Amino acid sequence: MLWRLTRGGRVSHLFGTVHVGKPGWQALGPLTAAALRASDTLALEIDPTDPAVLAALADTTPAPRLPEALNQRLLAATQRACLPLLALAGLHPVLQATTLTVLDARWLGLDPNHSLEMLLAQRAKARRMKVVSLESVELQKQVLVPADAAEAVAVIEQALDQLENLASRRVLERLVRAWESGDLATLERYEQWCECAGTDEERAFLRRLNDERNAPLADRIARLHGQGRRVFAAIGALHMTGPAALPRLLAERGFKVERVNFAADPARSAATAIDRVQEPGVPAATASATASATTSAAASAAASAAGPPR
Image (cartoon, rainbow, N blue to C red; front, side, top):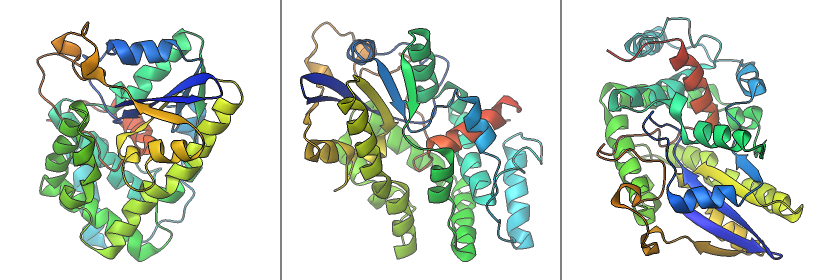
């Protein structure tokens, strides 16, 4: 999912991502690769290659005291992820639960160590492009971790429920299938099939996690472009949906916004039909639908210390 952003005689790009990947996903499609080459600045939610990002993950938010049964479920999920029991101890319990959701994608062949953000950052730095974080780890943690203890416990319970009944895999598979085929309409209906928006509280959490972050993200992209930069902004695909979708907000900020039609390029092979990082012959797998780049970075660090799931 790629959009061309034109304003003031310069062109930038907006690319919708997922926060995990696989070793075979090492070849960008030709149109996406060309857009990256034409840019001088890579803008990510956060830069996963920045050592300061991992340092900032150490959590100082007061954690709620979990009911013993819930704490045991969290520890059991950690063990199922093949992690040492204390591997996530430095994270708030909400971040532990969402990190475990990202790691669960390894059962389907995906890993946060091979995320699209990681690949793009490595490619950009190899070309000596400027790489910037549009948000801070602190801001993403504030969004992910409810201040209310009861709401935090509810988020943990929901994440563990979905891990235990495999709902997270079902939902994430559907999300990535939509992303791979460029099916924005299915992503627009995410709340209808995510099995995570059944109450007012859950829907409010999703709005906080996605919609409410979009205006500041759009402002930051517009500011970078206004400084004379040609920006390649790579942001989670769900931020491209809804009334506050990033393409819509950028149009409101004076950009001519055009979605790039990959199918219109006759020179492209079937292996790159969706013009993104792709491994031909491998079926769609899953990514964490609600994970932020911060959660992906935490999962990447944890996965580095663990073996594959078994």
